[in-house]
Amino acid sequence: MEPELFPPEVYLEILSGEREGDTFPIAHKTVTIGRDPHCDLHLPDPYVSRKHCQIVFRGDHFTMMDLGSLNKTRVKEKQYIQKNLRDGYLITLGKTQLRFRWPNAKSWLAEHGIEEGEQEE
Image 1 (cartoon, rainbow, N blue to C red):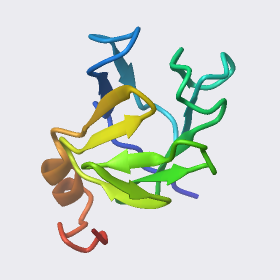
Image 2: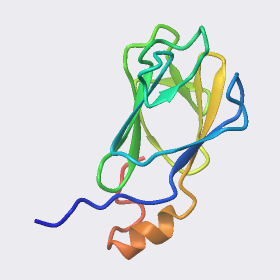
Image 3: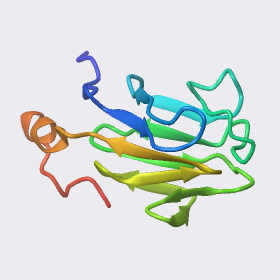
């Protein structure tokens, strides 16, 4: 059985809040983000739910999934329960803003025989 492919150099830039300026590498298929210190990415923002959202890799794309957060998750300034992510998309949780980065997405997809656009928007 082939090991599941996972792209390197995928990360979040923390643009505001207590952790402004930090980067967080996305190195696992599922990353949980929230105020709870046990989350993969802990954000000490009182407007962020304990378990606010997840970013999940689905074979050829990443999806943000809100986990029923009180203040909702915004991608590109619009609220979503679930939204596929592209390089540069802004994600807002509470008063914290993150930028999703997958700068080599096109080359990674091509290298693995996945046509860009096959993954849904």
